[in-house]
Length: 158
Image (cartoon, rainbow, N blue to C red):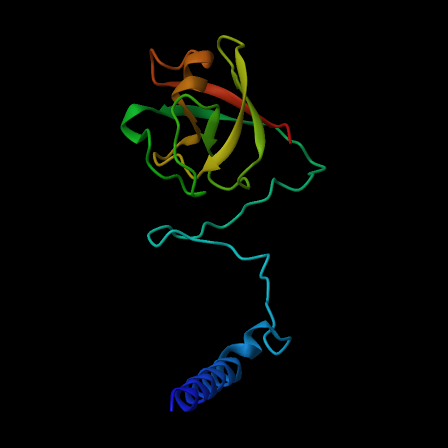
């Protein structure tokens, strides 16, 4: 009788092993392929994808523009610009009504002769009669902080 129980137990064990390999044995086989995705962009749930802007195409007519410049400072610091960048009052940037984002322009104060090179990353100026708004850092180097505006010349650098 004891021998019969051992045989039943062994048969039951072998049956369990057989069922186990029937159910899970194919996991190690080539039936299941692993796919690797490499070019996936991950977005934060609350982050909007931003458009990528290219620098202005090379222009053959690099004419100068003369007009009034103003600046925008601390009240806009940390706020988004039209290009999607965050405005940094310490960066050398500018707002122009129609030059492509990424265009570098030389802004020259016609009264003092001081000039800076800034990158267009916003649209503006908002007030009529002005041709460019520069960041506070650029305005400081141009000498605009005292009066708030100045007559300037704009030249496209690249």
